[in-house]
Amino acid sequence: MLIASAADGDPGYGLGVGTEPRGSGRPVCSRISLRAAALLDGDHERLLTTAAAFETAGCPYQRARTLILASGETAPVGNAALAWHATGGKVLPAGRAILPA
Image 1 (cartoon, rainbow, N blue to C red):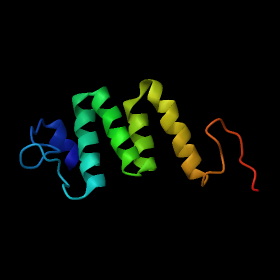
Image 2 (cartoon, rainbow, N blue to C red):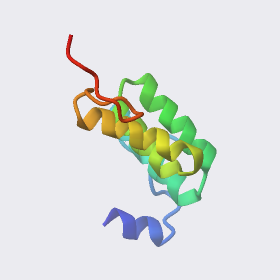
Image 3 (cartoon, rainbow, N blue to C red):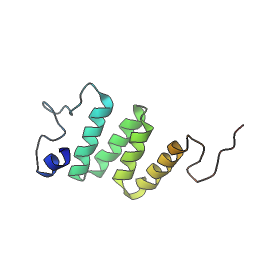
Image 4 (cartoon, one colour):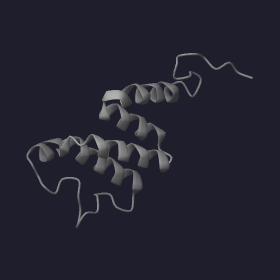
């Protein structure tokens, strides 16, 4: 189990050869590995950097999840983004419905 491996203090968890994240060649997998490592390290800034990388890669769902995991001021932004995606873009983050044209 990956969580147990990470919790056991495996220094290579989330990393492949050198500093390449596991899943190299698969950008989303690599970013998810980096996010997991940042969570384990309690590195808030690295989580925000990872969220920005998900945004750049066109992965709004993973960006939202990362903002929630980073907690603090970014969690409400992530929650609003997830709500927006869950409704197919029919609810604004402020909770107002978007009327069809």
